[in-house]
Structure formats: C-alpha cells, structure tokens
Length: 467
Image (spheres, rainbow, N blue to C red):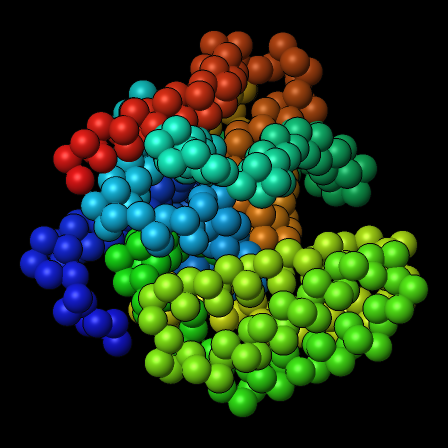
C-alpha cells in the first residue's frame, strides 16, 4: 500500500492501522464542513456567490491549499503537531497502548467538533486538536512519567491561538477605516439588496478573499490532520518512519560534514562554546552510526533518531539569538544545514498529503449551513455589508497564510469570527454586536481546551485498558 509494508502488523494490527487512518480522515472531513463557513459566509451573505457554488469552490481551494502546502509553505504546522507528543517514547511502548493514545486524540477531537457544529457555534478545530493532544500526552505522562507534553512547543502554539483572534478583531476595524478613507463609492458599504449580486468589482474582491481564506485554511488545517496521520505512521510502522529511507547516503554525510566544519571553525570564544562542542561530538556519533544504518535494528534506529533530535535542539539554541552568534552568515549556513538534516526525521509521503487534501476538500462541500447562519446573521445586529465581508476575509487570509509560513497552527474560526465582530464594531460600535452569540463563542473558546484535555485523557486511560 503506497510503498509501505504492513506485513509485520499481523491481522489485528493491520485492522487497527486502517481504523486509525480512517479516524484521522474523518477528523479532517469534519474539520472541512465545520470550518467551511469561515470561507463562504461572507460571499453567501453578500450574494457574491450562490451557496452551492461557494462551497464547491471553497472545497476545491481547500484541496489546493493542502496539496501545495509542502512546496509553498513547508510542513512546519504538521511537524509542530507531532512535537507536542513524546513521539520517540511512544515508539518504545506496546503497540496497543500507542493505538489507544492515537484513537483518544482523534475521537475526542471529533466529538467536540461535531457537538459545537450541531449547535451552530463557531469553534476552533485547532483548539480542539491541541486540547486533545495535550490531554492524551498528560494521560501518557500519568502512566509512564517523564514529559508527556512538549511544553515549549505548546506555549508557542498557545500564543499563536491566543493572539490571532485579537489581531483579527483589531485589523478588521483598521481595514474598515481604510476603506472609508480610500474608497469613496458608497456601494461598498451597502447591504445586499434582495438576491442581486454586488457590483462587478466588489464581487471579484469578495470571491478573491473567499478563495484566499479557503486556500490558506487548507494549508494550515490540513497540516494538522497530516500531523496526526504521521503520528499513526510512526506508531504502527516504527522502523519505516523512525528515519528517512535515504538517511546515511552520500548527500546526508556531506551535510553533516559541512555542518561539522562550520561549528569547528566558529566554536572558539563563542558564548555557547560548550554547546558547539556538544553538537560536534553528536555529529561525529551520527556519522559513525550512519555507516551501518542499512543493517541497524529497531533499538539502534531509535537511538540514532534521538541523537538527531538532540543535535537539532542544540543547533536551534545556537542560532536563536544573534547575540550568542553574531555572524549572520554563519547563522544562515547552520540553519541551512539544519533544515537538510531535520528532513531525516521530519518527512512525509505524497500519498498522505493527498488523502488529507481529499478529506478536507470533500468535507468542505457539506454541512456548511449551521455555522454560516451564525457568522452571517448572529454576530452583528446589522446585515454584513460588502466592505465588512471583504475586510473580515482579507484579515483572515493574511493571518492564516502568515501563520502557516511560520509553521504555527492558527484558528481560522476565531480569526474570521473576530474579524466579523471587528467590522461590526467599526460601523456601529459595541452595541452593534449580538451579545448572546458573542458570549456563546467566548464560552466555546474558553471551554474547548479544558473539555478536550479531560475528554482525550479519559479516553486514553479507558482505551488502554483494552489494549
């Protein structure tokens, strides 16, 4: 199947492998129809596109966003999801327990996503997934001790999820004021009349912003599902995904040797001289181990993987602060070699990207109406104007695109909802917001993390009893 070998899994192992993959694809399908409203609400409520046309077009753009993300943005979001969990430790526990952990994450996320969708509450799939990952990780820690969660990575993701709604709200207000100053035609600030589409230029603008939100949503949220799928592949097919199949070839050795030369030439007198020496020693050990990688057993591969992880942490520390390593050229060279070396433990297959892209694209084409109504009618007391729709989606697309480029998961739902709220405040003040809807969205925002953490933790502790 897709170039992977399932023969070592046995009958039940193969069954649970496909069940886990199906669960991830289901999560991404639910993510698609749960978040469709974020892209299509404004074009539907401004009459720029008919609902069926809007959701089909949004699905195509979500698919395109995910399928091209590897080449346009890189896979930083997917790898960030993986890094929340103690993946190397998970590779050493019994397969049944790993299965319980993966299913707890996915099932917990699906339950909360479906529940908020059913009640028409715009809720973040990103918050949902992160909460489930944290809950499963904490459950793992309760049983095995050590670090069940990468808290440094969790902090980075948490700041991204926290700041993005505030940014969307503020920038949407700012954009409305810019439109009022620059664009003198009053028709941009009108509500749609009947079923008539907006003027041609405004309609084009609204379709473009809808397309951008859909494309960037696919690239960001699709990678979250890809990260989950990679966790499954690394859990079930440990030997095949511990290290890239090309690790140890001449190209790998060349990158390691060049990196070693850079560090040796710049270690003397450096603020982090000990860190330099540690990295040089680790590179020497990796190069030695790489010579016999073709015949390495499971234990040796995992040991080598840990060494590569240790090396990447040291190099990231060395290049993090210009004051620690003032020479910008040297920092750039180290980062370039680091990027190449990280590919040996941070990689994916094209078929995995395609499956996720299809799931989120198809999911986008259904189930849109409940949350579209909330965004289009219930956040503000007045109907969305053309300027409000364009502003909210322009801010959302830029925020999501920038976050994907930085390798950070961001909530499309929260960014767009806060953007719509910002446009309402800009045109009518705080009194133009519907209090009950804003309160419901706020409660969902506050409850998602604790509920999904407890849900995923409980599911893991329950499921592992049957592992």
